[in-house]
Length: 157
Image (cartoon, rainbow, N blue to C red; front, top):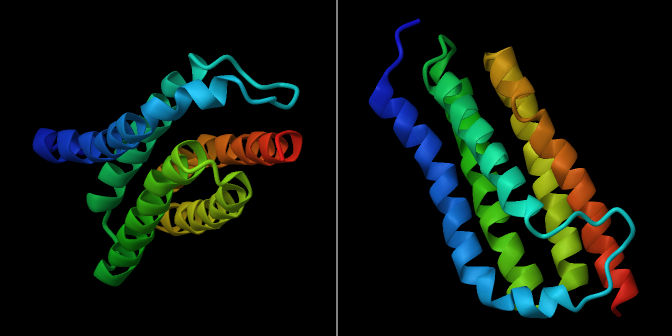
């Protein structure tokens, strides 16, 4: 398989830029987050940007695989659409959680994101098994994030 460097850079950069923008928009709310009571197993704050950078990179590479897959155009379009939907939902979650402090709403928003990512994985897997598998860590992290989100709501209501 010949690698299209321009397409690879674009598919990698897009989710990383979305994540960076969400982080920049919610960074001023970190002071409030620092004083919240957190559930057991809460990782140190430094871990979050590292994990998200890895996950956004995996998302971008999996999208590269989808855009280069030999599959029916309608299947690729459906997979791309769900990918972009989940990125929009992903982008809004930190704003709801950190900026607005809507912890319970953010939890349900995260459940929506979890469902979208699950559907995305299935669609990606049908086109390129590797592309689907690359997003399993994302789904696992969202599961853990759901635990943290719910725990923060519960402990700080």
